[in-house]
Picture 1 (cartoon, helix red, strand yellow):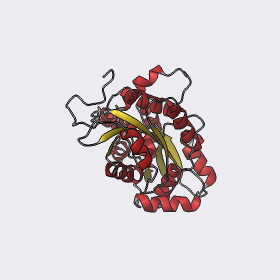
Picture 2 (tube, helix red, strand yellow; picture 1 turned 90 degrees about the vertical axis):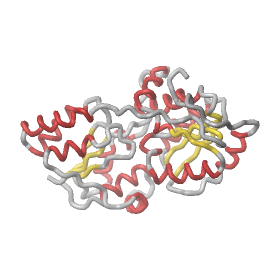
Picture 3 (cartoon, rainbow, N blue to C red; picture 1 turned 180 degrees about the vertical axis):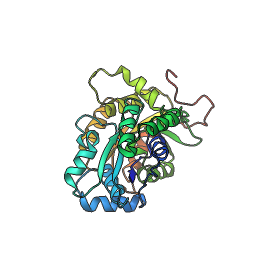
Picture 4 (cartoon, rainbow, N blue to C red; picture 1 turned 180 degrees about the horizontal axis):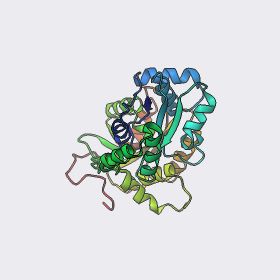
Length: 298
């Protein structure tokens, strides 16, 4: 059984599903196109859907003939049907796709999903048990290093957006370059340890908030009280109305300069200049110190 793997750059358990498939004797098939080519391919079929969906589809189509594709589940904000049910919605919209299997992107429910998948791939319960034992050490969130809050001769801004979006080099690389050119240093929310973000999100007043809502809120809460952070850049993907609404609500609650930025794979961000001017007005940058990290309660 040839199984494709649609593991994003934002995977909470990087390498888990690839290692599990290899233990079962099934070498995972990865996308054959680079990000720009995958985006172009996805747009040809779904021109009016969000950037992340187009990228995912292009990567799936580039895998060629596979029996199934594993799709790690994205954290969905309220109303985000694509993130909640990407495999089902893609299968309905695009005919001829291989079986799309949603799998957890975190420890919760992981072993049960892996067991079910293993039996489907190998039909050998003993081999599945051995595979689970070997990959179990990879089934916990890795302890990520806290990002520095300052950089010499730069003014710090928090860049807040969905993990699956900000982790894409197609989005992050040109945005970092644009910020750097303007003398800004971006602390990106997807680089914060997920466990710390979710812990801070326990302060949310909405008990029924989705995982995506909690991740955005937790990142804002974690960075909002830091004196080094002079402004907030809230990022959503093109044609993603649910995320745009979620970040807009967060932006309205901030007392520091904010900018809502819609990204679509572009490399030019002219709106950042006015944002820089608002952020740096009266501000003074300073050299980083060893204590400048994003720590709960700092």
